[in-house]
Amino acid sequence: MLSRSVLILKWVFLLIIILANGNPPEEPVKCSNNFTNCTITNSYGAFPDRSTCHAAEATYPSSEEDIVLIVANATREKRKMRVATRYSHSIPKLACPDGEDGLIISTENLNRIINVDKEKMLVTVESGVTLMQLIDEAAKSGLALPYTPYWWGLTIGGLLGTGAHGSTLLGNGSAIHDQVVQMRIVTPGSQEDGYASVRTLKEEGELDGEIMAAKVSLGVLGVISQVTLKLQPMFKRSVTFLPKNDTDLSDQVATFGRQHEFADMTWYPSQKRVVYRIDDRVSSNVYGNGLWDHPGFQATPSLALLTLRLTEELEEATGDVVGKCIRGRLTTDTIRNTAFGLTNNGIFFTEYPVIGYQNRLQASGGCLKGLIDAKITTCRWDPRVNGLFFHQTTISIALSKAKDFIQDIQKLVSIAPQSLCGLDIYNGILMRYVTGSNAYIGEQEDSLEFDITYYRSKDPKTPRLFEDVLEEIEQMAVFKYSGLPHWGKNRNVAFEGAIKKYKNAAEFLKVKEKYDPLGLFSSEWTDQVLGLKGGLTIVKEGCALEGLCVCSEDIHCAPEKGYLCRPGKVFQDARVCTLVQVSTQSSSKAEL
View (spheres, rainbow, N blue to C red):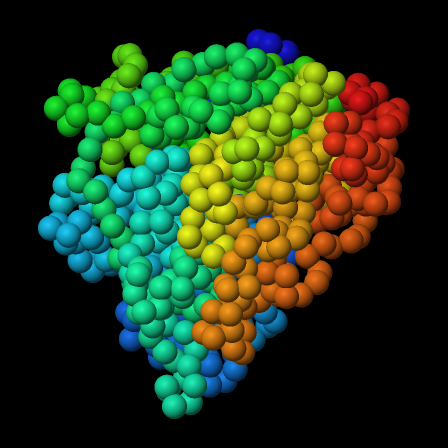
C-alpha cells in the first residue's frame, strides 16, 4: 500500500510541474439558444442539495446603463432576478433565481478598471473585475490592496456579496468590504423612477447606514455596478512557514494573530501538527522577488485528478482508513517540502524567509491562466474531468472561544485517532484571522475562521468514513460555539439560525425592504438564510449525510449501511450518523 501511494503522489506532482497552465473553468450559465431556457450551477458542478437551477433568460450587461435598462424592464414585469459572476465560486445557491421565469444578470462583461487615483490611493472598478485584475492593475501604479482572499478567481461583486476575506487582525480589517469607500448599486425603482434607481453610497456619507448593508449583501439589494476601494503604497512581505506539533495550539491562537500581520495556520489534527504562517511587512529595500503559487490553485493534469479521485473512492468503498492516512501524510509532506507553493524568485525555492512584493504573495490561481487545452489540465475541482468533489465547512469562531473549540476537536481525535486523516488529502484545516466589521451581516467580532474541506460521495446516500466525526465538528462550531458561516461556503446545517447571531440583522432587512420592496432580487435560498422563510432544513432519507439536516431519526443517515443517528462523542447535544454495525460486505471498515 505504501509503495503504491508513494508512486501515485510522485506521479501526480511530477505532472503538475510539467503542465503548469490550466484549462479555464467553464461558464456557469448555460442556455439552449439566444440566452433563453438557462441553467446555472457553481464552479463545483453541484449545490448542497444537488438541485438544478433554472432561469428563463440570462443577460450580460457591459455598462451601468445596460444594468439600469435590464433592472427596469424586469421590475416592470415583476420578474425575479439574481446576479451571477464569471466563475460562480459560491457553494450555496446564491445565484439561483426563483421559479422557471427568473432572470440571471451576469457580471462577466462588467470587467473594466474605471480609474486608479495614485494620489488619493483609490481604485474604482466595475463589479465583474476579478481579484487578479484588481491586484495587477493596482501594482502597475505602485499600489496594493492590503488584505485579500487567497484565490484570484473571485469578482469584486462576488466578494462583497459573501464577505470574503484574507487573514489579519490588524489594519482596517481582513475583508475586501472593509476597504470599500464608495459603491454604486442599481436597484428596483418606482414607476416615477423609471422602475430602476442608481444609488451612490459612501463611507461616512448621507447614506452611511445603507453602505453597511451593501458591503455584505448576499445579492439581495440589487446589482452592484461600481466599487471604489482604498489602496496602500506597494510593500514587501517576509513569509516563513513553520511546522510544529499542535500541543499548545489552543493557547497560541489568541496571540499568534496579533504577533504577525498576515498570520494564518494550517492544522493537521490527525498528525498532531500545525504549520504557522509567520508573515509580516518588511522594508521595500530588502532584497527578494518571491512568488506564491498556492498548491490548491495550480493547474493539475486531468488524468492525475481522475486517479486521485478514483483512489479516494476506492479507499472509502473498502474502508481503507490506513491507506487514507498514508496518502494524507504523503500529500502534506509533499506540500511542505515544496514550501507550500512559495519560491524565492518565481521559479525555485531555496530558503526561508521568502521576501517579495505584496501583489506576488497575497493570492494566486494558476489554473485560471491557461489556454483552452481540451481539458488536459484544469482547476482541481473542475466537474468536467471527474476530479475532486468535496464539501466545505467554513465557520468563524470568536477568538475568545477558539481555544475550547480546538480542544474539543483534539478530544475527538484522541477518541478516534484516524478519523481526520481524510482532511490531510485536502491539506488540513486552514485557520484565518477575521476582524470584526461594521457591515451589518459581516463578521461580528475578531474571530478565527476554520476552513475544512472533505470528501463528498457522488452518491448522496453513501456515508463517508468517520461520517460522525465531521458532523460533530460542524455542529459544535454552529451550535455549541455559535460560529458564523462563511456566506459563500457551507452546507445547509451551518446556516441554521445564523441570522439571529448578527446584532444588526434588523437594520440590514430594513435596507433590503427599502431597496427592493417586492423582493425581486431575493430567492427562496436567501429568504431562508435571512430567516424570512422556513425550509432551510430539508428532511428526507439520508439528509444528514449531505448536511441538509441534523439527524433525528436513523432514516436520516444510512441504516442499511450500519449508520444510525446517535449523540456526539464530545458534544453530547450533537446528533450524528454513526457506524454502529459493520455489514459483511465491508467488514474492514473502522467501527467507532
